[in-house]
Amino acid sequence: MGYIAWIILGALSGWIASIVMGKNSQMGAIANIVVGIVGAFIGGFVFSLIGSVGVTGLNIWSIIVSVVGSCILLFVVNKIK
Image (cartoon, rainbow, N blue to C red):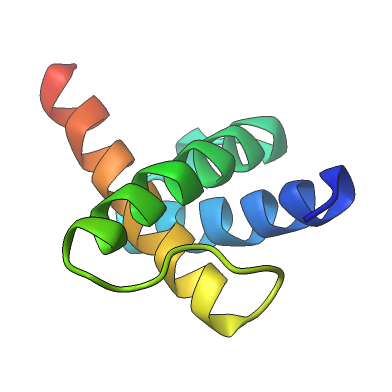
């Protein structure tokens, strides 16, 4: 996956996760992209632990994996704060 695809996936999944976790008003575009990209790595790791495939490209499955990872990241950050 190219850099542009990672940025698009990060922006979309970070934005969806921030809405799900109720953090949309506190996060900007750059924060959504960073949360989405880091969330894709976390989601890929979690899904590989349960025996499923992680991020495979710019598709619906990768968005789901990335949103799950992003929600996990936002939950952990919220608990630390």
